[in-house]
Length: 85
Length: 245
Image 1: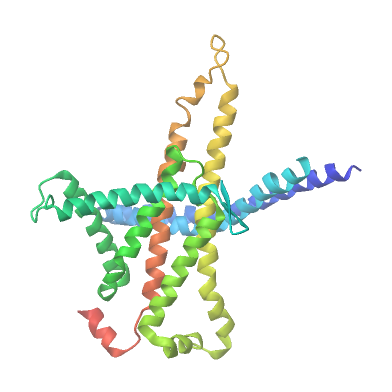
Image 2: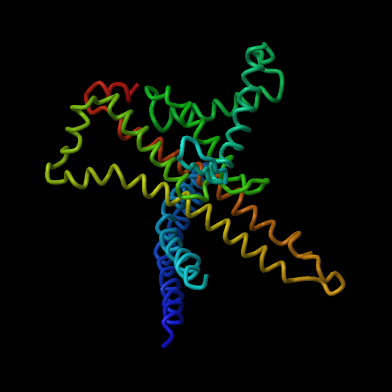
């Protein structure tokens, strides 16, 4: 088998598997949003504070899925780019 | 990329640094304008001009956040938070304007910012607790957790730098891909003009260039403030009395 083709294929496969880590924070952030909606329903006057807290909390949780995105982008644009030239 | 040789050594200044100089130039010019207005008496004690009201609102907002998150005794640290916030918002949103390279899309820049915050937190902790308190803190709950406490000082550097870098770079790459793919879509009677690039990227650009920049700035500054508040917390009776006041 052509080693270059094998390497590129493995890079593509690894890149796709790396982005699967976004499942965790996706579910977590959805649950945070659900709790925030519930809290706004219970106390509509505190809506802006609840929404700001939710956004900040979700932005911090988002980092974990971004680690996966970083690996994914590095595999495609840097590793495969080195081979293709 | 500015390259020059001085005394036999070859120095290269990357585009991120020159872009950052442009942004710093704009921010410093703005600060000098405000300084001139204050010095020459154009800012009155009872504000009259809209410019003065905007500037005062911004400064009061920063001081209020610092007081809420770091406590009243840490209010003198507000200038660092304000400068950091202004620099980060300007750097992250610079993709909307003409700039060689977005500074925060270079990992060296975000790592530098995170290291600056790390030094800020450690120096404030040393200032409050002195060296003995700082070292005692490392053995605080159980001496066996010493490696974890050491690690606890360095993980915010990694996570803050990667968070800012990944958000800005992924936004930039997605926008590039969208513009690139819209380049192929042309109207049949205008074969070379990428007409579809005019309208469709707007909501996505609003999310990636504006909303994401502001959120990442807020998260970075809030993490700096919270880490400083935890590091400078005093653990004695006087603190409980002060907190109750």
